[in-house]
Length: 461
Image 1 (tube, rainbow, N blue to C red):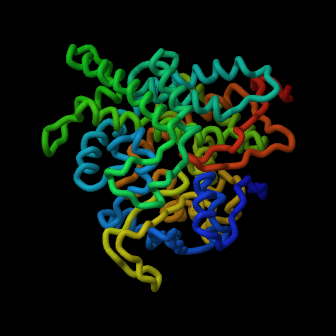
Image 2: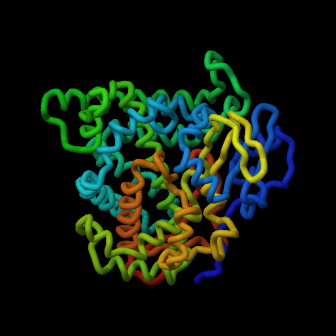
């Protein structure tokens, strides 16, 4: 097991004024937290407007996500920042609306559909190899951008059967990059409760990028609706979702509802996969011995032509991706709200309190993991780690609100990682380590820069 410690952002002092906390939070939610959260079972933070409780206790996490999820709806404080893009998508809704949305969406991501989507993932992986080949002579490559491009290509090919080179797909990708650069994880309305009729103080660049993305997605959805009506629509995820009726009401998604759902598929399916893939490549670059083991494993199959079933022949590659998700969970925190008061660990938790579940802290918690800051994909072959996974590993949440695309993301991540390691060798830049920073997802503050060569070479350029 490697004892090399992976980079993480500095922690703030235990006590800071609320407005300093707000400033830190809008800059980076990870460095806005105190170091004690890596050992605490529960921590309380009081603001002038609400109380917040970060929970690492496995019993309480299970209560929130699995035993009584109806008592812990998603908090509107997260939706405040994301609603210009996501509207009323499944990511931000609660209650009967959310239940109806999941009844329509879930069938598209069942096991058989994942098998059907795999060839489109392989096409995107092949194009990612070609794009990276053109960069091999460069002194350094910003690998997050490459990962983002590849993940977006997967989404467009599996959802709408178009490559990212398609004109509309390219426009969406560029607009989303602008949205990501302009959007803090929470805006002012997330901290200061405002009536629904009060305009939300979103940045102009954020609302413009969100509006552009939604207009482009509407064009794609309208075009697909016309193909469905004409009987010429391809059998992809968009067609499946748009033709699925709610088994209880018989209704399908309206055009505006479909735009909402496509927006979250793009946000969750593209942004989270890109984040995890970028960190996985950097971790392998920093650990050449493990990179060589992965290369030997993927050499036994051709990632670009193998069957979906052959993913099972890549256990180490899968464990590397799992470990990247542990160390750098794309969604670092999940926020719920108490529907009624309760007693937790001897404290009264009031109604409408914010409950924060933090994969970032849980995945590096000193009471759960041996060497929690070390990159060790072999830990996933240990039965004790598999036991911890049930309580301390939440990259895709858990319970009824588990990410509908969790299986999709794991298949995509393992495939893209295998295809790139099969064709290239990666090295970190000397003396440079990326610093994680969380806005929409956990990305590197100044990108992830790596040297690459075709795998037939043994030394970096």
